[in-house]
Image (cartoon, rainbow, N blue to C red):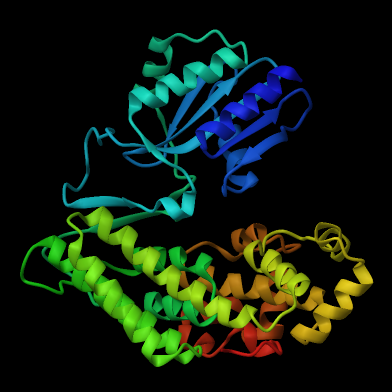
Length: 399
């Protein structure tokens, strides 16, 4: 117990996403977790370890993003994903392709490989795992390829040919802002990558091209924020500030990260406009549900978190939101399903599993019930969900 407390304090001190599994039972059990990475992602990494007898295993998610697994007799510590600032791709398939890392999404940090190895060795000492520096270095050199976080990474091709910014991307971006949901913004970026390259918007350098794309993105966001009720003067002042900020940046990574931050800022401001009309317990309850559509949290669990009785919370939520908590939970899942349909090629069965529907048929039934068409049809015809908004079902006012 003393060792575990020291171990968790160390992980909290370095601030990395991490999980500790107890492996004393048939299935791994989480005994500590920090960061925004879903437990299911860590569980998948655990099961992907090639040799559970190995003391250390390193997974490589991109040319500079890694996770490290330390295995003892009855425990597995997974540290990461961590961005290594000095990692380079050994044999890039396309020299003009760059993975743009967005730290807000993975909630991690950037360090050098040497610093990372030192942290691993320190953690190994805490958990009494004999581990030499050479073994850790070798594990990095022989890292296991992983696509576990592909939905959190951006691959942008800077090439001679380009395409217009895709409809699916613009729609997803506007929806994120209109709903006041910053968590949707990264999915919009992924949607762009899945559906085409950033267009050639300048005859100059690649940096100028990506800045121009950022200016277009903020303009799209601006119109969506105004549509959601933001004051005209405030929106245009923010737009001017965003453009000035973009013009000061000097690298692709800085520009891409800044674009995400700006769009999230707009979405957060719209969110605040919506949330101001709700009482504190109701605002907190709907934020919990909205932020974790995959979690089947019960009314009793919500009430316990908020220090209220289930009956009081249910009644207040229904009065202010305009529908029961159970109905709102389903709508949040449908809203998330629409995002995934528009921004990925995941099969319906996998989407159903991600969102904790009973099965694909359950997802299809609920989707058709609230959207009016089955999910496959919505994926093939994005315009069918053009005007679908979660808040169309609620009493929440805009602005």
